[in-house]
Image 1 (cartoon, rainbow, N blue to C red):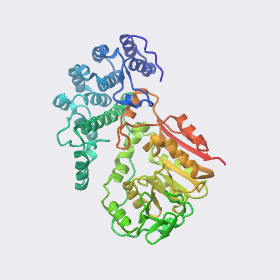
Image 2 (image 1 turned 180 degrees about the vertical axis):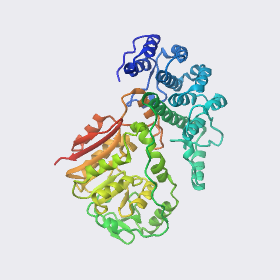
Image 3 (image 1 turned 90 degrees about the vertical axis):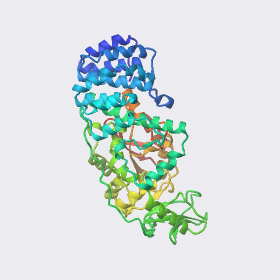
Image 4 (image 1 turned 30 degrees about the vertical axis):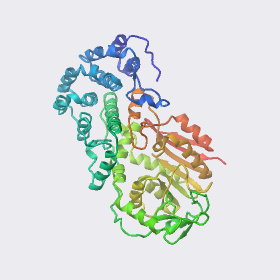
Amino acid sequence: MSVDTTYAPAVLLEDFANATPDGLDTAYARLVGALWSPGTAEDQTLWDGGTLTERAPSAIPELIDALDGLDEARTGRLLILLGLIAEAGQTEAVRAGLDRYLALAGHATPALGQALVYLLAHFPHDRDRVLGVAGRLGLDSGDRSRLDRCLTLMDERRTGLGRVWPAPEIWRLTDEERAFDEAWIGALTREQAEINWRNDSRTVWGYMGLKAYWSVRRGPVVAVPGPQAPPQEDATGDDPRLGLFGRHLSALVCPSCRGPLDIGGAAVRCPACAVAYPASRGILDLTQAVRDDADDATAGLLKSLAEMPSMGLYYEALLRPEYLRVAGGNWGGAVTLADEDAYIARSVRPVDGPVLDLGAGAGRWTAVVAAAVGAGRLLALDLGLPMLNVLRRRVPDVPAVRASALDIPLADASMGAVVCWNALQAFPDEAATAIAEVGRVLRPGGTFTLMTFVWDEDPVCRHFQAAHYFPSRPAGTLLFERAQLERWLADAGMVVVESSGPESFVFVTAQRVS
């Protein structure tokens, strides 16, 4: 969004205060742009709180004074701007208005409460005063746990590190998971722990900021239920269910030599490399080749599946719906599970030949594809064992392969269709490689059905989108531009047949040309 920021902040602030409802967003964008910038997707170093202009420090008292007498829509926006300025390094100057912020809590509407909680979350040294008014802000339990975390300073045990998104309250760990956390957290230096703690804080601020920004501009957040968790399953037993892979042997290739695979004993084997790949009940692990007998490797896979932490279940029920809000702007419920199901079924059903679910995750949408084309035609692929562990419960008749989307272990032109649903952003730095691989494995005329996310055009939303720091990408979230996706598809030999999606969602169907 390009805005004119040549006027003095006081003039822009007056214009903002007097703007008509139709002109409010434009006036706010001009005011924000005069004081603060989120950086660009190409320069990831600037996602750390954004960058302030030289006029920002002197404008802070004016912004605080302007909170008196404004309506909810304007007050909420100014509170969010003050929070952005605090994140960018002027926390103490913004903190000077604390008494005024706390006074607003006494008569805050739900939307104003969201904006207040985002701003107040930047003042851990005023924890008691902030928590003293939190009960007046209309917060749900997730909001309260996020606020409590942001107002907490890291202790010697580094309690809660890495377990904050989308809300600290959801993380109820088993003894095994707690021991896992203690091991990796204890191995961090003090400096590393502080960086991770700060990144966790930015992640929570990003969620709170997006929720507040939606509320003051668009109204209440709409609850969108996530997928139901699949049934539990006994993780014991050693039936590899190798028969599921028999119908795909003509397409599967060895990741090392690209030669054909065959089935022998309790494993899938590559005769050319003289290696075997372990399998357990419909999951084939093509990341672990063994040159001798596959029994030990298979035993190791079984042990991993039996002891795997419950991340796959967290993802299904809690993490995915919240990520759609953050990355896609789904705070108003523009995209539902039914919408996703219908698009997948409509796009993939006409195709012939085998179908690959790439980045299949925990299998919710693998089941949708299977219903559309039949489980016998479908192969699921993901690199995460926790996800495949959940997928095998949901769709036990669909064979699953553990492998990388950047080097798909399938022969050229072997698939009639590929689906990559809500997964491309999981490896954004290598997305072009993954799309090229899809083009390679598709038959001429085959289709590629994709859902992912693009950057919001609003720089404030864009900043909050980028402020999510996940273990897979410590630099912060990286999303896409529509033109970028279209270029990668064209480079991979595909033409876009249909492209749509509300907010920051992208729904694409492309076809492999001859």
